[in-house]
Image (cartoon, rainbow, N blue to C red; front, side, top):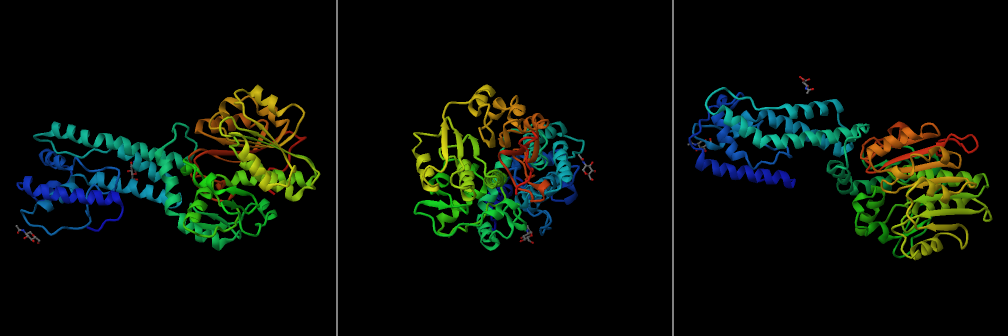
Amino acid sequence: MACAPAEKCRNAAMFHFFRILMRASFAVAVTDLPEFREPCKPRVVLKALQHLRGFDLTSATLCDDCDQTLPRNDSDVLVALHDICCGCFSGYTALLANLHAHMLSLKADLQTDYHKLLNVTETIWNHRVKLRRGPGYGKARRALHELFGGAQTRLWHTGHIALSIIDGSATAYSPSTVALDIYLHFKRAETEPAYDLLVQSQNLCLPNVFQSKCEQKHLPIFENFPAVAGPGQEGFMLDFLGVSMPIHVDCEHSSLHLFAPGRSMPCEYLKSGKTLPRTWPMLDEEYLEWADSLTVAFRAAKAARPFRMAELGSGAFGIWAMRAAKAFAKFAAPDVPCMLLLVEPFAMGDGSELQTHVAMNLPPGRCEFAVHTDLLETGAQLKTLLGNTETWDLVDIDIEGAEMTLLPDMFSWLSMRVRRLHISTHSREIHWTLLELMQRSWHVAAHYPTQTAIGLRDLGLGEFMTMDGHISAVTRSPLLAGPPGWS
Ligand SMILES: *[C@@H]1O[C@H](CO)[C@@H](O)[C@H](O)[C@H]1NC(C)=O
Ligand SMILES: *[C@@H]1O[C@H](CO)[C@@H](O)[C@H](O)[C@H]1NC(C)=O
């Protein structure tokens, strides 16, 4: 039996099993084709349902090969099952195949027709097998409902989550396995092709592994950071900026699946013994955070002013703070101060990992790192921490949903002290609520909502799949405002 994906195999095997079963129990069936076309006779449907109970409605193979006309003769039970399935359940089969095609298309390159998907999703909700009036009508109705009702609800739900991934404005959907499934698809199916894309493109274009394209140019800020040369140290990954990270940090993390492809794919390449291309970041949900971190550091250095950045939810390494510090140190005179404030109540440990990380990546004493390990629970605490007199180049916030308790009353205050904000958002509702609250005091330069396939389409950079949402904004305060772009 030729069948590639596991699900299809299972269904094909199931179908085969029913074929055998049918030989024994369905030998009385009449195989006259019109008999099995909708509207169907209740008794035929009832008989067929007994045998269809095991089918998995989440795949597109409710019936096999309905396009194919099987050789027929009066007593052939294979033909009987085939005809019932393809006849009475043709509506379901077509809808399933249709929905399935939309999901495949979304997985392949994040594109599918929104209105057609909406149509099939709503049609699935309303679909009923047409029955002839006659003996067994009520029983057949109930049996159909019992078998297909729950599956229809699940499919309808799946369709709506897919719609919300494309659209992004709906707030009703919580973290979903559909989004995760689409996201993981790119980790699995695109890991190898993406390698070729990265190696071949070599920063000449911005690789989009979600659409297997490399057609846009990188944001201009990256041009200031040609990739460093030379091998990384044993056990470390060296990025284009020259920052070394222990391999285990990204590559042995238990929730690896939640990282952007730009983080998880290099781990796969290392595992398979490939040389990592030392390229600028690929287009994924962290690209904007890269651009923000480099831009603020570059501008501070060029203006010869002290650099100050706070990273809330910094993890043990202060990954973004270190990237910015490295970028600053590259362009600033050695005596221009650099101050990084890391807030991390959970993962900081004894601070030794951070110490090593700083020692490996910056000249001794180049930047001052302050660590705050108490939980920030109120805007007032954030005010105390950031202080009244200091100006911050960037406040980068990734605090797993606590942004909603910390930030709503803070935007105006922050806008007087902070040049740029980068906020990760952890639900649609949080995302849209914060955007609304920011409008007055902040200019939102770019954003993408949680679990969407919208990406940086508005900037002309293309679509990609995100798990967290991200917001990049510059203050409207005339004293601090700079150009909103990334150069
Ligand atoms: C039905 O047709 C198939 C294929 O043409 C043939 O192999 C089979 O023997 C036929 N069965 C009967 C009962 O005639
Ligand atoms: C879906 O599209 C078909 C064909 O265009 C139309 O007849 C039908 O009413 C639509 N259904 C829904 C639920 O929009």
